[in-house]
Length: 97
Length: 361
Image 1 (spheres, rainbow over the protein chains, first blue to last red):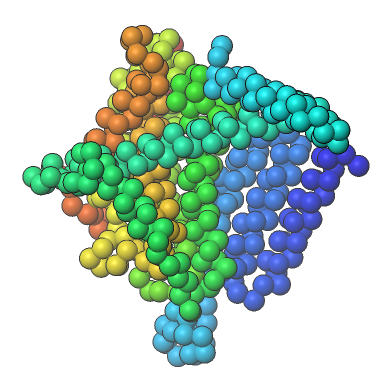
Image 2: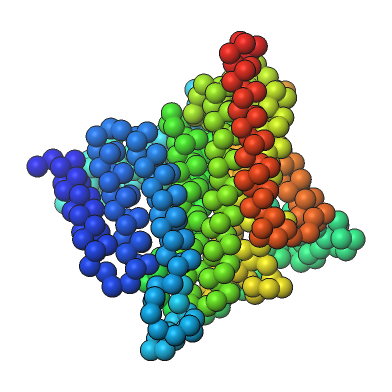
């Protein structure tokens, strides 16, 4: 097994792991961070196929724009749709986004 | 042609040769394998890459410090006071501040999301430092020269809104959350005009590498003359992208304490502050590269000097704008970004296409 195959296996494994974490993670903002990691991982697989331009556009569009759009969507809508109107979570004291 | 890489390659070959000779000189039998290994090609390449990265980073780190010094001193003069006073012309104030931030404790707020809080600061600092490597100082003095260098730089630059939003959210502080939202909205709103102007430059020059773009300008004309609208649009958007006054509403001190960086402290904050200035440097460098001819200039001094002189002049205008203007409101920045700068950048793109179609250049 040559070095390229090893690195390909490492990065594709990380990508699949991050993609699973997007679904598994409890916190929705952490899910977005894992989604960004997944996009970067897919971009690195493009690099293994010698498609540098596709890699850069992937980073520019998906990590730079789509992810921020999703974050905006999360933070501008209430995470908790039912309950009182307070902006602070009672258990954790965290400010709700 | 002698580039930074080839010079350092011969230096590291010589250095490793000396090391191999020293190992031979000890006459220890078990070390002879190491002496042979040290002079092989992968080791030389590794040491050269390390040296290139270190030298380039230290050089540009010093420029970051020069930018901070210049801003303090010039702002002082603009406001009719003296500015910093420590050391030669107040230059050592930066080092004093750096040591001060290094001595402070690194505090993570108790209610913060610890992993994301750390990750966001790393993302912002590391991408700002990575950007430095994309920008060459001259055809000889560079780290990477790939065909897509301009696109690479913009792709790395687009990481920032994500890191800022995550950093503002994970601090678990309403001021930092509002600051993060404002910063991300502003960066997204101003990134599109910047990309449109960059597209017009690429249409004119037909190249995505900095060396190619500057080479085209050396052969023909500085792009500031045909694409003057683009220069103005890019300049305004560049000030907004580096979050400086008048576009500093992400960290409006009077209302938001320090914006999304409120909860960061110690050396982490010092590095975030430095990365702000490094981003300002990157934007000045892009204005210089894309419109002002980069290292183009008469031959009596080095190309790097011309490039740096132009960059510092652009930064002088940044300071001037900072001192002369007041902060704009959130709704005004969206109006400016989407209703003023975006149409201007499209007009600029049309001019570029018309000039290219008519084969003026």
